[in-house]
Length: 267
Image 1: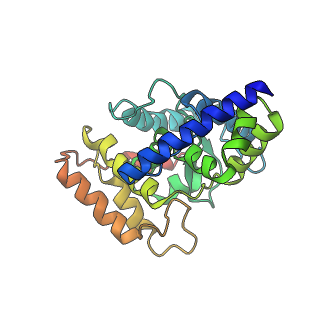
Image 2 (image 1 turned 90 degrees about the horizontal axis):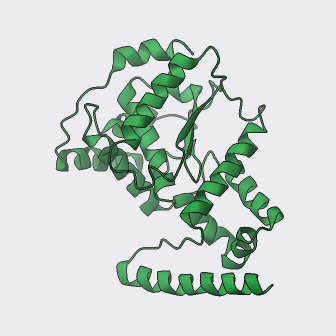
């Protein structure tokens, strides 16, 4: 009980500090989780996903090593860009979900990346998929999920979970798994993730505005994925992504359409 009170006092102190900081800066980034706890939660969520093969049918690596190596190569370009803050703290593992009907990708807290075969098959080029992956990695690296969980559950509940209450921690993990098609991120979170997707690719030979190509292709889809949020509007996101690439003078122009088409045909 004493430990709980001490932690709760510490968290409340953090709330006061961050709220004051937020008021001064106009930001709203309160997060009761530490970076290590982001990783712990992500590991638990990854375990929950692995335990639900019907809902999340992971494509086996045996017999599919070439496509896994290809997707992980894209991931490595992003992670090694020099722009990922928690490059060494999070595992940044990639799994492919065998579901051709779902146009989605997500990244758990702590850096477990999942890409659906439906999205891979739907997109036209490597830069588009890398733009999506960069966007999702940015949510994890910016710790947006645990920011949202802090707002959703409140400090006292999270303190209980972080002190070792497995029921509370399990409930949080279930919430994340249940909302993996995405937690509802704020306008600022979405804009930051779009911007970071450009920054991650800007130093490479790949078209850094690949995420804009994804949004253009998704326009008109009846059931777009959650990360194609209505805030900001898709048209504004396209314009902002392309403007960011211009402002950073990103020189990369490769889309690698031909090799992408060959690789996705293997699925």
